[in-house]
Image (cartoon, rainbow, N blue to C red):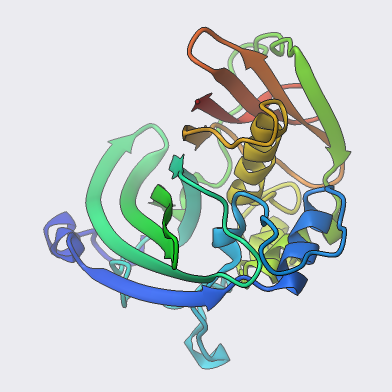
Length: 284
């Protein structure tokens, strides 16, 4: 770690807000549908976009001179300047009120809600929680909490497990796809995400120590949400909570899985061995 993590200083960012807006275009909807293995169609004004299209809207744009080695913007600004080199999307919670539609002028109001630090066998972790409210001319569309985790580069390679992983869970509903580099590139492009772990194999293997390109956390969540909605007649969950449990890498099959529960559904993405990489719960 290059500098000491001053949690008191970082917590001064709690309460900071920012606003951004963007238009849901037909071209964006076509691109996201294609990336999520949906029928592309010919979206026209008023047609519903995929449920998590807001993750493609109003993304921050910085000049090349203000990017870090990993492709992210340099620390500071709206998010606190956490002095840990690795930043990942850890999980969050979504509340869906209505879909965003082609032609909508969507506004995102964001607020830093918490900054915490934890220490353990994996080293120092800093968690930043951000609340987002997505609105259109019709009112509230989505309320969200996004959890970001920062950690030191020295924790890149987890220790080998002392015992074999548990058998993969059985799923009543399942679909599978290939996690190839083109899929990861498309999602990076749609979200204007310059994080090199998703497209630069030399960087991700030689610098960050991963075995291959890393699948985006929000894309896994998007697949889960779309499966949940499809199993409920196109209606998104009223509330969806999710968290990443281990990285998912390109180069092999991955699956999106669901089981019905008394309260709603348990859902997860899994690697080619069937082991969960992201878990979520959905209620209607």
